[in-house]
Length: 87
Image (cartoon, rainbow, N blue to C red; front, side, top):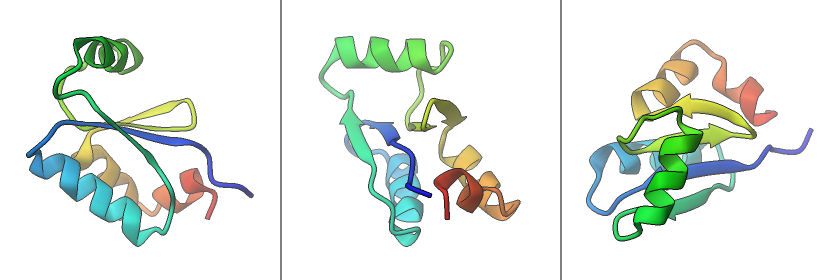
């Protein structure tokens, strides 16, 4: 099964963003990083997709909104992340 598209909205100097990207790298999956630091339009897009959440990171696997770094790590701890990634 192919890996679904993964979007990670980030900002510069964000340790939670770095942690989320690190976990995805251990899964050897490609993701698209969307830096919203200096782009209000991208931040607005992220906020709409994330149901009003403005914090970063905001992570999407396919069309499913995962949430932030803690949410991603919680999926991993429950053994559910690999299923979402198609692994």
